[in-house]
Amino acid sequence: MSSLSDRQRSREDEVLRGNAKLATTASTRGTLTRLLTDWRFTSRVVRYLAHLPVRMETEDRRVLEEVIFPYFATLPTMHSMLFVGCDWYTRHYRQTYFRGKDYWTIDPAPGQRKFAGKQHIVGALERLDEYFPPERFDLIVCNGVYGFGLDTREQCERAFDLCQSRLTRGGHFVFGWDDVPARTPVPLSDIEGLKHLRAFPFPPLGSPRYVTKTAYRHTYDFYRK
Ligand SMILES: C[S@@+](CC[C@H](N)C(=O)[O-])C[C@H]1O[C@@H](n2cnc3c(N)ncnc32)[C@H](O)[C@@H]1O
Image 1: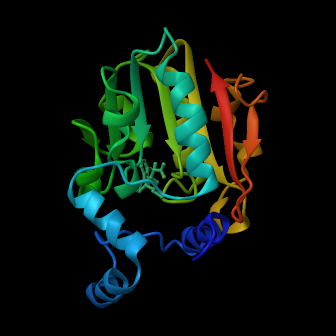
Image 2: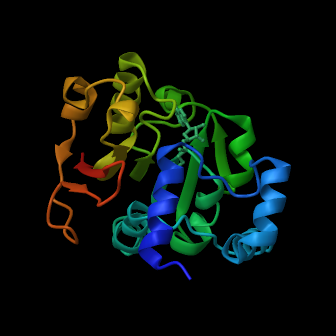
């Protein structure tokens, strides 16, 4: 039987290759083979079909779900939030972590709506002003979007400016990204929009930046308005 770290490593390989799929998007033949040979995969598919939480088994996801989400979910000032970019492994986030909060999701790809929260916008982060007024959210989480569609300098500048303006005073911005050349299309140090937010030493991790122990150096940056 493979150890947890073996499983994590193979999941990280899949993520690195941009191939971390559940049965929702994998090829039919590949999925069938895996369903018959990989009981862990089968149990995950069954859980997904039963609308139970299905977690991506990587270290960066553990940090997001076990450290970052609980901190913000219990913060007395956190009432409304925007989660940017949806996929099969984020479908349960509202129910599991942010039940009772004013939880919104946004993603420009119409097909991602099936993974979204009840309150969802089909649209891009760099067009946030078309959907929400200033000072709308106490928390914006933009994880795995930079380098996955939010790619040009213009997009990034506009998106981060709009995040800043859509945050309430004292609101939080969590920015998760892979610190590898293939996923850093524009140097982040050049993006002016991020400079309008203050670095926030995130109490549970003791720093405004946390680099996870993953092959793709998934990094969380914490900011505050
Ligand atoms: C790798 S998934 C990340 C999903 C999730 N946010 C997470 O925590 O991993 C990237 C998602 O970001 C979406 N996306 C790409 N460009 C975007 C943009 N400009 N604004 C908002 N979402 C975008 C894609 O459609 C895709 O569903």
